[in-house]
Amino acid sequence: MKGSDALKMAAPEVLESDLPLALSLLNNLQEQVVAVTAQIQALTKKVQAGAYPTDKGLSFLEVKDQLLLMYLMDLSYLILDKASGSSLQEHPAILRLVEIRTVLEKLRPLDQKLKYQIDKLVRTAVTGSLSENDPLRFKPHPSNMISKLSSEDEDDEETEEGQSGTSGKKATKGAPRKYIPPRLVPVHYDETEAEREKKLLERAKKRALSSSVIRELKEQYSDAPEEIRDSRHPHATRQSQEDQHRIKYEESMMVRLSVSKREKGRRRRANAMSSQLHSLTHFSDISALTGGTPHLDEDQNPIKKRKKMLKKGRKKKGFRRRR
Amino acid sequence: VNDTVTIRPRRLMTSRFLQNKQIVIDVLHPGKAELRKTDLNHFKSHKMYKTAPDVIFVFGFRTHFGRSKTTGFGLCFYAKGNESKHRLKKHSLYKKEKTSRKQNKEGKNRIKSKGAGAGATPWRCHSKLR
Image (cartoon, rainbow over all chains, first blue to last red; front, side, top):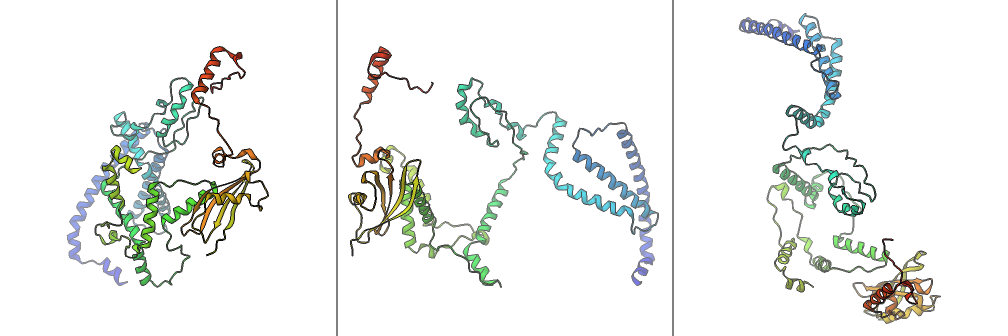
């Protein structure tokens, strides 16, 4: 074909400029090959002498070692064949290479998960003890919580038990049970401020995307048919749902619950708001999508004001006034 | 504006453990604003209920917004002595003995110091440590 002919007969100028470069590269290659063979021979001698025992190590790493070695062997066989001029078509080593490669790819996420533990083990082996800021140094010591006195003092343990939150068992009265550690791998918490802010921003964006403004825009521009959903009562507020819950409870338990002042205030405010057509002009906040800062409407968040006022009047007189 | 009052019982539950029947009562009174407790208790002696009025107790009536409906609870006991004391007191069927706490304690200590056979009622130790 024309293309291959053009390749075979490259212009003589290109050949001439390439020739010395190729010669120097080939010489380099020879030197490097000699150095590498020397190193590998030293390594094999050491391994055969048993300087690297691996029977007490992680079997996962052992598997990886063997796979990489097999990969190298197949690869070198391929190179050998190619260098002596034969074609690589339907070479038996190619299939083996592909297989080993897929297995290695599948092992990679496992590797990620074990990375922290392996690093820590290696560091511990090198330095001889746990490092200064290793989180394992801060683990709870359950043996310190069990009372060393006689069984009469076991009632005190129940209050102190809350802090070992990872184990779900409570101390029972009588003989203390054996502490079974939780099956969790400790992972280091390294979320920076920037990451936290990014997460908050993402969440705000998600909320803004599902707000009514954006939803209406979507409906306007999409080709999908208008979906009629089984809608809840349009005036179902949180307060009305709480009221229903309270009524259900009262009727099933046959008791009347007392209404605190805060509840009364909330109820009054809910009634007032629903009669004020307040929600007509207040849409949800989509500033996360537009990039502006969220501005708080005065009448949407009156709670913060009230909290501040309470804190001011915290004397005894204020108490009486509250009653 | 009529003055009829309709009583509609709603959720009836029979409790064999507490030996009573519990019921949620809806009272519709489109004319009146509120019902008085005396009126409500008057219904206890209605002939529709086949028991005596002293085992029926109603309580907890709250009027809904709009003032034409009131909801409350009612209990009907199998036997006479099972109702809680504060409710019996409201209907003056129970009277608490006016024993003074101090007098009780002094009496007990007197018996303790004199020994077990010291009075008509021997004092027994009810401590939890036993």
